[in-house]
Image (cartoon, rainbow, N blue to C red; front, side, top):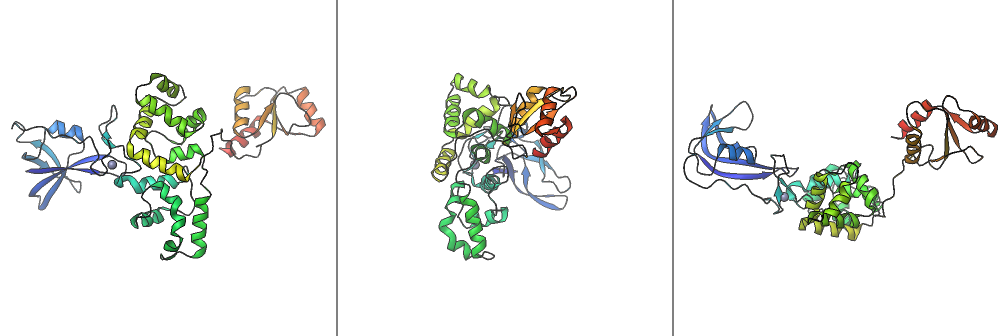
Length: 357
Ligand SMILES: [Zn+2]
């Protein structure tokens, strides 16, 4: 007999229903738990607490319900929660998805350490020395309730020092690498929030378009409350569709997330986003493309140069640092030779681009 249906929240926020049974012997093993997979499965089986069910156990996997013997009994259907049992945030299934997820993200205890690890990871804030074990340890000590607490660890210098394995130098190094991120790259910070569907690339695209996080949030809030113009402004960005808009809106709409976010901004001051140029050997240099380019258009070549922090110019002068010459290069190539400017071919350019990616 199915006594209860409990909802477990996974590290990614997924709500998984688990059936609790009156103990029953199956193949010599006492079974008290069965997985019910998801909301759709519960609906398919029509199971409710109090039902008699047939279960199946295969190998080491958690047994599952295959049939509901008392489906016809008149009792209300099981109401799948629309709020996370761990944190009370709204729990939603996105269109076309069966899994219901907690939208609490930063605040949900079930997801918190994973979110913190993501927040400090390389692609996000990239805080050196704050590894997964340290996060687990500090979290267990109650020092990291939210991401902003990372920036308050400086007040715990003596406490950290008192822990096993920490010396003056390692504590100082950790605190210094945290301090170094007080004015973080806005796109990394956005990515670090771990909002669903906001990967590193989307975060950059959004910040390119909105420059500051408050502006992005304002637009996402408007879109969330039905402002079509705001939604259109977001979806006009390459790679941003309705799913992203909804995820952003849901995130900022959640009161817990607002609190965490406002708290973060008391500690952090991300400067307005400027298109990130990669570190490359041509950063700051003036590049001239001449002759026929075989693998890309002239516009693409110029865009590549800009991404690498270089500036593409139309003519060769004493200020030119590098000439990329394809077949048929004429007077510009000759001038470059006269001025002693470095000349490379398209393959050489491709190597520079590849090395910077
Ligand atoms: Zn939650």
